[in-house]
Amino acid sequence: MPDLRSVDEHLASILAATTPSPAVELPLLDALDLAAAEDVVATIRLPRFDNSAMDGYAVHSADVAAAADRAPVTLPVIGEIGAGQAESGVHDLPPGSAAKIMTGAPMPAGADTVVPYEWTDRGATEVTITRAAAPRQHVRFAGEDVATGDLVVEAGTALGPRHLGLLASLGRPSVLVRPRPRVLVVSTGSELRDPGEELDADSIYDGNSYLLSGSVRRAGGVASRVGLVPDRPQAFLDALAERLPETDVVVTSGGISMGDYDVVKEALLSVGTVWFGGLAMQPGKPQGFGHLVTPDAPGRRVPFFALPGNPVSSYLSFEVFVRPALRRMLGLTPETRRPVTARLTHAVTSPPGRRQFLRGVVTVGPDGTTVTEVEPVGGSGSHLVGDLAASDALIVVPEDVTAVAAGERVTVIRLDQD
Image (cartoon, rainbow, N blue to C red; front, side, top):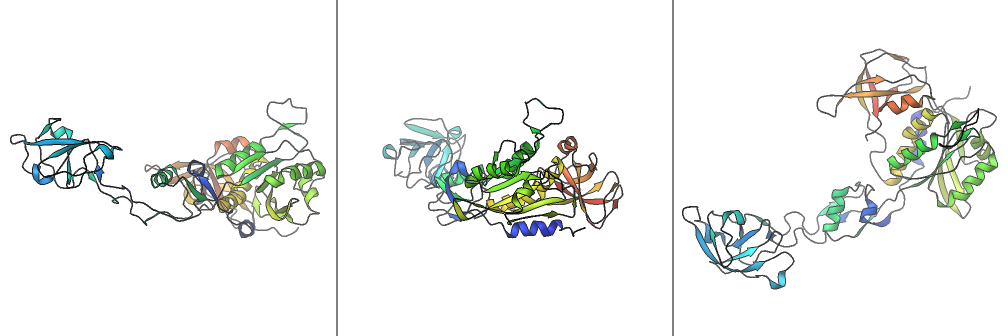
């Protein structure tokens, strides 16, 4: 029996051959959830100018220092300042006067505080103020949020809505990011049918391409699902050739074991750029990885992942090997999910020399985040897609462990969290 490659060795070889995608400039909304490929420095300050934080009256604080319910202060109102109406507003405020001001409007020169409407009689030509306002109260000062030259987004930051709002506020209509990889998902097998079609006596519905396409989208890529490919090498090669020029990554499922109809291996072994072999893992032993060259651009190498055909094996292989590569292309960290430990509720066994990935359901503690225990779901069979759907975690049993008793702590990978 040939030596099996370890899980860690295979992942390391994949990541060593994977580099971040070349950066592109995208409009802000198209950059959501992508990694910034540049350090963004503020070219303006926020706020841009001193402005009112309340609807009220701009005044000199010394003029209203003694204001109280029983000793109100009355000041003449010399004008009104609205947001975005600087030309018609009050630019200078003499001592002993007030200017009506709206939220966001620029403070007039000389004024150092704002008296909210609630502390006044809301007079138009003169205003009676019944409460003192301290200096700088209810004023947003220029640059107190962001100063010119501040680093506001570091390269590698996954851009969320709050980052987009900040960049837009700084006047940036676009940003340099790592684009979403275009992933071609191919299911092979003459027995496969699309959901909704009639089944023959020996046919099954294709769940893998939906499972993998959904995983690609969840990982941040753009999935392109190919129609079902029969067990004919030329049909497989034709499907690749047609789509490869517009593809950044290829992911296939099925056709890589030791059978007579393993179309992926048969079609690509002669190419010599894809490794096929076994890994010391269960499920997911048969694997393939390499690169394909596009006919229109000989120097361009497209990563190629050949995953097993059984749905659980295919999904686990995506999680362990493909997802980290996509995140590296996207410039996102962490590339692999952060493992945690939890108490095992039921005893499990594992074959010697294999890293086993069992499906499980976690229980979270009172804090809502800490995993306290994990319960195995279903068996170890690689066809148990119902159990896979019911799980939310993987229980990892190391290669040198053949049994884990109930109550022991195990390594857990949560499937819906980084």
